[in-house]
Image 1 (cartoon, rainbow, N blue to C red):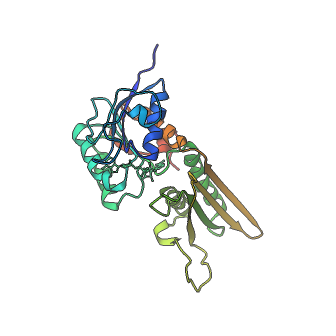
Image 2 (spheres, rainbow, N blue to C red; image 1 turned 90 degrees about the vertical axis):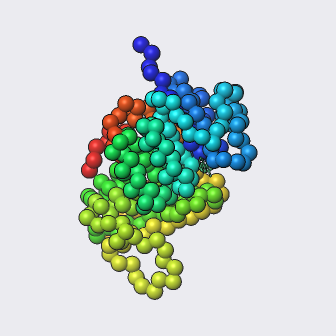
Image 3 (cartoon, rainbow, N blue to C red; image 1 turned 30 degrees about the vertical axis):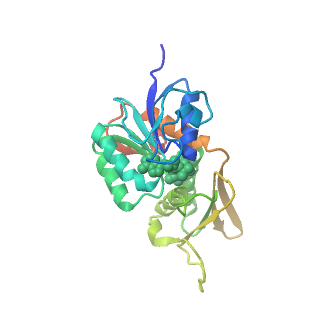
Length: 271
Ligand code: NAD
C-alpha cells in the first residue's frame, strides 16, 4: 500500500533554512511541495522553488502570499516579526503549523497558545532529534545529580544569528532548572561582565559565542567536587533541523488541535 504524501508550504523559503527545507521536500518520496512563501520584495520572488534550492525546476513559484491548500501543513522558518501574521493566517485557513522561527516575543507565544486551541501546532526552538534527546538527558542528569552540582551552559552559532542566547540554550537551561524546582528566569546569569562577586550555588550561567559558519553547538557542564560532566551536541548540517521539522509535519497531519513539541513527535513522554 502506498504511503500518503504529506503536503507542505514552506515559509521563509529564500532563507538558509527555507532553502534546506525546500531541497529536503523535493528530494523526499513522502512529501509534496504545496507552496513556497517569502516576504514581499527582494530577489527570488516569483522564482521557481526548485531552482532556488539548486534542484531541477518543480513548477512552484516563490510567492509573498501564504495560501495553503486544504490538508497542507505550513512549515514556518522565517523571522519573528512575521510570526504573528503567519499564525493568524493559519488560523483563518485552519492549517496545521510547524513553527521553527526562534526569538518570538511573549505576546506572540501567547497568541500561539490561543491558536493551538483551534489548530494543531508543533513549535520547537530546535527540531533536531539529537538536541531533543540531549534536553531530555540534561533534565535527567540535573535531577539525579541534585542542585549541589553547578550547571553552566554555552552555545555557539554562525555570525548571522540574531537572537541570543539561542532558543535551544534557553530550552536546555529551563529543563535543568525545572529538574530541581527552579525557574530559569530566576537563576539564569546571561553575562558575567564586570560582576564583582563569586558564583552563587543556584545560578545557571548561559553564555553565547557568535562567529564563522557554525550551524549550532550546545555544551552543558555539571561541576561536582573534583569531577565534571559535559553533554555536547554539535550540528554539522542544517538539514537535521529540516528533517526534524518535516518529520513533525508528517506527524501533525490529522492531529487534534494542541501545542506540541519535538518531545511529543518523538514520543519521549513528559517528565
Ligand atoms: P534567514 O534570515 O536566512 O531566512 C529568513 C527568511 O525569512 C528570509 O528569506 C526572509 O526574507 C524571510 N522572511 C522575512 N519576513 C518574512 C515574512 N513576513 N514572510 C515570509 N518570509 C519572511 O534565517 P534562517 O537562518 O533561515 O533562520 C530562520 C529562522 O529559523 C530563525 O528564526 C532561526 O533562528 C530559526 N531556526 C530554527 C531552527 C529550529 O530547529 N527551530 C533551526 C535553525 C534556524
